[in-house]
Structure formats: C-alpha cells, structure tokens
Image (cartoon, rainbow, N blue to C red; front, side):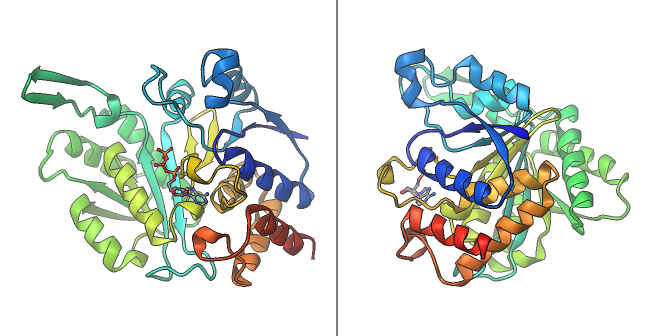
Length: 332
Ligand code: ATP
C-alpha cells in the first residue's frame, strides 16, 4: 500500500482533509496516510508549528498532501509553507487553472497551467533600509534556477500533451535579470522542437488574460510574476474554493490548495473541499494512479454538473453534504 504524508493543517484544514480522505477511500484506492499535525495547534505541545517529524515524514514518503497551515503572525516563527519549500527544495510551483463544469465564470475554455519559479527573485528576502527614506530589495535570478524551471515547464508540457510553453518576463526593462530568465528559456526551448514557443511581457499577459484567456496553455514565470498571475488565473476559474496547487522538486512533491486556512469559516461545516480534492487528483496522477484520479475527477465533475455546490459557489450544501454527493457519484 502506498504511504503518503497527510498534513491536515489548521483552520478549515482538518475538515477538508477528512472530506478528501473519505472520497479517496470510497474510490477503492487504499492509501496508508502518514498523518502529521502541524501549524498553530501543535505549537503549545511542540514549541514550533513545523516539528522536524513533519519534514522527516515527507522525506520518507516523498509525497505529501497538505491542507493549509497557518503561521502565527508576530510570534517569531518562520512561515511553515516557506520552510517546507526551502527544506525540500520544491522549486516548482504548479497551478493548473481549468474551468469546472457548471461553475459560472466570465470565460469558458480556460485551461492554463501556471509554472512559477519558487526559490528566488524578489522573494529571496534580501532587503535593507539604505537610509530612513529609502528601502532596497534585491532581485536574484540565477541561470541554474531559471533553466530548471523552464525545463520543468517543457517536460510537463510534453508529458501532458500540451502544445505551447509561453515565457513571461519584463525583459524589456529588467534587461539583465529578466533577460537572463528569457535567455534560459530560449536555451531550454531548443530541446523541445515539438512544443510551440511564445514570449510575452507580464503587463501584456495580464491584459490578454482578462480579455481572452483561452489563448494560453502553459505559462512559465519567475517567482513574483508567477505569484500574481497565478492568483489572477485562480480568479478566472471560480476563486479560492476551487484553485489547486502543488510544489514540486527533484525528490519530493507537496500537493496543496492555493487558499489559506480560512479561520472565518472554521468548524462551520461550510468549507469547499474541491481545491484540496483537485490537488489530490493531481497528486494521484503524479504517482501514476491515473485510473483512480480519473474516477474521482469524473465523480467530482458529475456532482458539480448536477448543480451541487457549497455556499462559496452559491450553493446550499455543507462540506459533508457535498462530500457525500461526490461519494454517491463515485459508487453509482
Ligand atoms: P492566507 O494568508 O493563509 O492565505 P487569507 O485570509 O488571505 O489566508 P484564505 O484563508 O484563503 O485567505 O481565505 C480568504 C477568503 O476565502 C476567506 O473569507 C475564506 O472564508 C474564503 N475561503 C478560502 N478557502 C475557502 C474554501 N475552501 N471554501 C470556502 N471559502 C474559502
């Protein structure tokens, strides 16, 4: 039986984790979940929101499904999410953004894969005050990190029958840093003659995305543009309740929804488990469990097609009612 680390997180994390575990179980796929508590709920007992045992578990199992984990503000703890990404060198942030059946959005036929570099750029956190009126933040772009993220995007495109990989920069202004990223894209692209190439500036991309998003296929971006554009794309497909994600490295992969722990709806049986469920479906595909991924996805899509929604999508169902409806469609 496959062993996978499960981080139930806090806020709505435990509710949506339980929903997803029930659905996967009902599909007939047996997973030995290595459950690891993390976040605010473990601080009192263990002195940190991210005990070593959590990272050790992911290193052991190589794959994790992770619900949102809150890092308490102003208590001196480093972000749990950033620590996991850094520690395991999860250099690629993958966010598939596709229209879901019956979920009303401005556009149909959105099917965009956002591949965001996860380790450097302005997020390297190198900042200082030059004097009391001037702050400086350093943007780091390296050939190594840029080439490996571009390679990741092209490999993903090849493996998943995508037609195009479009690189997004502001290389006309940041000629050296974004220029280097673009240069790395061009080098790597030569190894993939089957895939179409496209280069676009980030400002133009944003305008095109809100006018005609279906023209885009796979996007590859440095960290900051990737962060912003992936939220824009999440908005195109129905928002946080349905936005899935994954952080992937050479040795380990952590699948998680885009949304946070939503403390405002915690323990109210209101949370939409779809984003975590879609993340788990992508995880199953990643581990080669295509049959079960397909089976669960079909049941989810059927449930949505029947107009069964949680309240964030304008429906009437609670978390458990929605989960039951997906399970009904799985076993029909
Ligand atoms: P973080 O800083 O951890 O990202 P946040 O407060 O910015 O947290 P979220 O926790 O993602 O953002 O929540 C933003 C809003 O979206 C909240 O009002 C929350 O209720 C709603 N929301 C987020 N996820 C879900 C979900 N799965 N189902 C229903 N509503 C959700």
